Length: 494
Ligand code: RVP
Image (cartoon, rainbow, N blue to C red; front, side, top):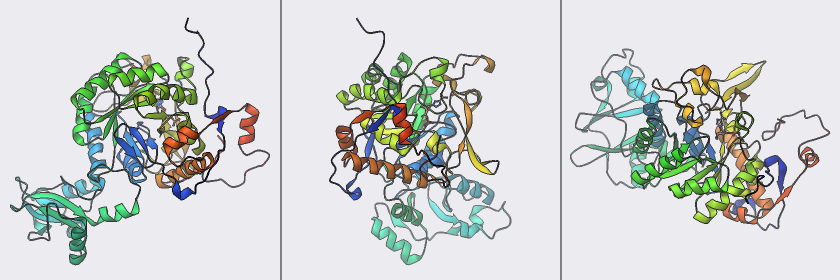
């Protein structure tokens, strides 16, 4: 007879990790891990698919730091696909399919293009793709009349160009010798085939841990749902270059989710598909059986989530990860621990419980690179943050449709006053750039790995052991019997 009561559920604050025998130095530590069967990152962090957390700018910042962003889906298909494109083009050894402009475009159009892709210049091509010249900031800066055509101000051919297949060193040498910033690559007929920029070389040195695909482009994931045009969205995201898609719902142990995973997987076998969210061993198994290359765990742990109160549903996160990982390990499928992390120590706890990576919302929502403006309240700086199941998120429309509702299986609800929210809206403290936040989080993780005696993420999973604690233990864990006078970069009392 199956028992009515499952085992006791534990979460981050219920456990600590035991210090274990360790014979390593921090330099030996390797934090790389798998997001899904074929997607490897250098630090095991994902930014959440939420409209106050991950758009292109956050995804670029996360990938540069060695993690990866999952672009949210609360916007039109075109807008989300465009963001995938933005990330994939942002920096790479060579841009295979560079942005170009026509000679009859105006400078105003050129400005808009450069702004959108954060680039400083664009090759000019005719309708057949033949390279006619290049227009850069230098050509445009002193031109007052923005209605002039690109052909009148561009630097025309002949330009310094390279052959397709040029080596990194040869390219660098040409850029240096001619003191130029961009090297168009052309075929013998003069057709533009690629572009190499100095900026990309500099970035590669600046972000040595960046998560990249086999062509040297930053990695990016993107979320899709299950209702309406969700499959068209998946197709558009994959065509735009997404490295993996996440079928992202509040209840991944439901047929619609399994069906969507299977459908995407059968039509795009070469792209990894992650399914979620689930919080049990059976839930994980159902997604794996449907073909998922990764499972995302978390029902109710999110800082902005009210599912556990509104529906009374959920599993405390450490137990949820542990149970889901039992099924995932058997199948060789990686696990993402999604939501509920408050401190860097929670990353290590998630990994020891069985996660390969973690997904962060509130810890990143306060970053410079998250969508939204800085808010000043009583002289302090904040950024707004909200659940995708909050009323405001479910009421947001992209291309005329509301896409957040189907995460909570409420796509059929007509009339916003009939929605059942499962999330709240609010704000979090401003935290500065992603680089600084990730530095602290990964620094904390490396300390954990040292304490546990795990050189790699899999070793840490294997070696780590928990001790359950009481509320007195938790009180002892946090600073106590002191009035803090200075804020630490990795600790605030919540
Ligand atoms: P947190 O990091 O604790 O802020 O949690 C972020 C996670 O919470 C997301 O990745 C998502 O799984 C979940 N979420 C997002 N919206 C909502 C909601 O409105 N209930 N929950």
